[in-house]
Image 1 (cartoon, rainbow, N blue to C red):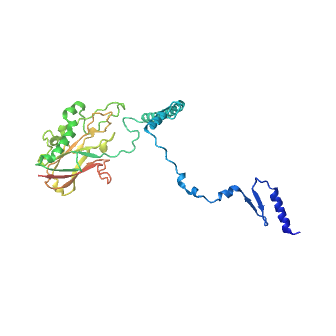
Image 2 (spheres, rainbow, N blue to C red; image 1 turned 45 degrees about the vertical axis):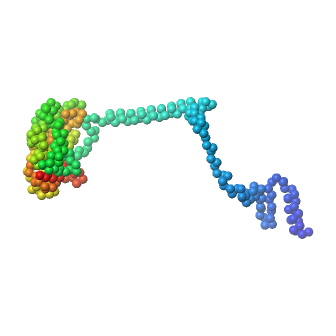
Image 3 (tube, rainbow, N blue to C red; image 1 turned 90 degrees about the vertical axis):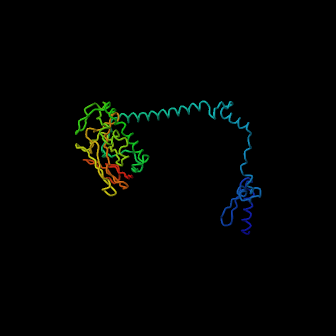
Length: 342
C-alpha cells in the first residue's frame, strides 16, 4: 500500500464528514492550517464601477421650503400644541432651568454683596487704611498750557487772551467774598492741626484771598501782565492727605533758567511770598474739609527779554522734598518754555 493513497483517503474522509455550514480547514503536509471564510472572500472582491461613483454618497440638498412652511415651523418651535412645549422645552424643563439660574445668580449676588460689605467695613472713608509710603508733593501751574509753552506777542491780544482767561477761571474760588464766607483767618508759622476732633467731624479751612496775589491777582490788572510783556503764572503744591510739607519749616520756591541765556529771564517777583505757609496743612480730605483752598503762589516775570526763547523751571525746596527725580518731571518742580515777542 502506498503512503500517498492512504493520506489522500484520510483527507477525503474528513471532507465528507465536515458539516456543510462551517468554514473549511485544510491541513497541509507541513502542518499548516488555512481557514477560508466566505466573508473574507467577499472583502477581497474587486470594486465594481458603480461603487467608484462618489456622487451618490454626497449629501442630498434639502428641498427648499416655502415662506408658509417656514412660518409654520417657527410657530411650531415657539409653541408645539401636540407636545405642549414652548421653544422646544416643556413647562417642567423651563421651571427647572429658571430655578437653577435664579439660585445661581442669587448666590453670586450674595457673595458679591458680602465681599463689598467686608471691604467697606474694613476701610475708612476719611483716610487710607494703609499708608506706609507718602510721596513728596508735585507742583502744578496755571495757566493751562499746551505742550508746556507760553508764547505770545504783547501787542497781539489774541495771542495772550487764552492765558488771561485761564487765570480768571483758576482764581474764581479764591475771590475775597467767597473766602471770607467759607473759611477762617489762621495763625501763620504753624500747622493747623485738628486731630483732636472726631474722625467724621468737619474740619475748618484757612482763608486764602485772591487780593493777596497783588499785581498777579487780576484785580488791578485784568490782563495779568501779558499785555505789557510781564506775564504772571500761578504755582500750587499737590494735595496729599495728612502730609506736613517741610517738617516744621515752610517750603520755599525758586525759579530760574533751565535752558537758554540766564540773563534773558530778568527780575522775578513772588506774591504774596516765595513760601507756602504752614497754616494750610495738613489737608484732611474732601469729606471732612469741604471748603479747603490750597495756597497759591503767583510768580511774575517782569524783566523777560523779548524774542529770547528760554525754558524756565520752578522748584520746591524743603525738608523731605524731592525736586530732581529723573523719572517724574512734575515731582517737586514744573518746567515750561517762555517766548515773548513785542
